[in-house]
Image (cartoon, rainbow, N blue to C red; front, side, top):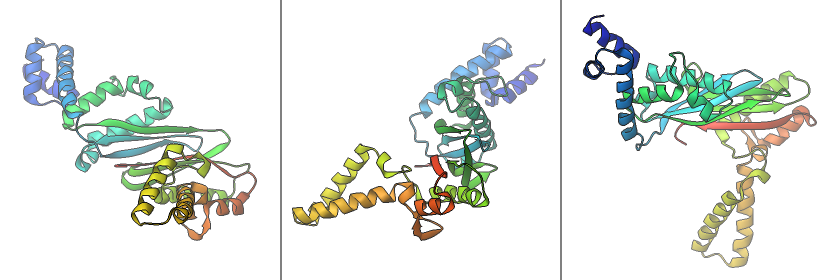
Length: 283
């Protein structure tokens, strides 16, 4: 193999520039495997400098079927890179692997990709090639034999790659057209209304305490008497809980109804929202 052919092959397998490949081959005395290792080491150095930067762009990918589905977020620095084919392909392949390892980050990082290298190695190589900070963000896997999983993608970039993704798991005894319709609509509702939890009792105490402090300061600045301030504060906290709990949110399809009202109309006995997640890039 000529020197030029070796450089071309190294560029093709690593995505590195001509000068870097030529230099690595000389250092490795023409050994391609050693040259790849040299570039990877240099890539680690380049990547580490980029990891201190902000990565608020990227994509969400949902992969699976109605019984088992996973969602994952891959972040980068700019929207331009989020539309890059290398980034798109990387995110899709990572998403498929993520579903097979049930969103276990350690297993994901150590899993082999189609090119034979691990996810963590490919991530380093992609950072070196693209020149931006790239990170694996939030992820979750839904699996339940008694449920059916519904998904929704908003601001789709390509295929099932989007800027906002929702996965929701419903449990019921017998499927119906109304349940299928509700599954699709509740996914869109979650995307639009961004609930924290299914029921208000699940809102964490530290979140409630933080909200109480904000309300207290707000009422103090308005000069409200303590007795009146306490009543207003209680009302505001209850409203905060209702607005951030899925079942007590106003139904986006008909704001006169609450989500729990729609749920009960369809099947008050067996239909339940088991779990959900909403991932939006930049949040």
